[in-house]
Length: 391
Image (spheres, helix red, strand yellow):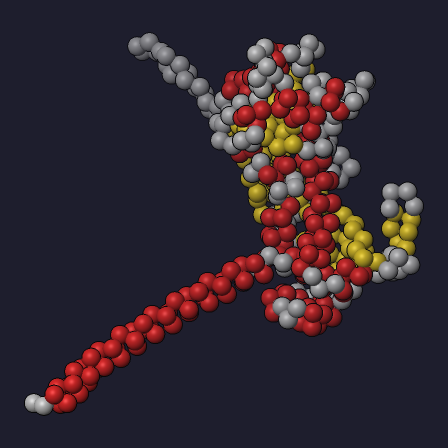
């Protein structure tokens, strides 16, 4: 074989193998590109899915008319998910029922703002207006007996806790310029206005309302009177520690299961506990509270627990509850009505949405709150710990 023939043979063999290697590299690169693009699409879909603010803006732009709202969503964002939701749920009597998928997302946005929801009570879907939950009101007992002695009879006693829809309505005026503005930040503003209003009133009801005048009954009125006590008048680290421990003890002595216990505090009480120091100048509770816990249990802070109770307007309350025995029954839908001509009360005057170039959004949610056992919570009352901070 000549030198030229040998070189050609080597080139043919190596060239074929090199071609295979390059093809394999190209195939691998294509697979990686496809994986990256798929992951990117999934991330985009995940980010787009919970756009409740965009749904509400579309409804506002369409003045509550689903077809006009769908056309707005298609033109403004080409958002097929919003368009589909609007086209499959027709408005009724000038109102609109937010589809279940978006209603559930609305509740998810509500949870961080509403302290009671953030403590993870049991959520019960209620498709009709009422629901009864069984509750054990008394337990069976056991006794030691001697030979030939009859076993004493005992049996648990049962009751029912009834949940009945209460209608929560909130009214939010929205600037028409904000509705027309296409930035995603506008979606957040519209959504947060709605859920903020709902969270504020809902927390007030679930914590302190008395169940009259079409309102839910809150923790204060569900919890047994025997589980309520006043804080020690002498405010000191020792007495504060005893009061907090006593709240836990009230649940212990009533055989609470301690499945999901937590505290609810006012801002004044929280700041006092964060700043109180021991005799050595060390913060007593701050380190643990920075981790979101107090006495080992999570806590939530809300202005819906007042700091101005009592004759001196310097008292507050602290709640310790096993939220495994707390339940929220709610409809799976939120009803929305929209008007650009309505008048509304702004806290001091009745103003016209039309003259202010606003669209008024009214959202209605239906739910109720109950405790399965009224001894699964304790309330420390007449708490003046934070009075020096909030005065």
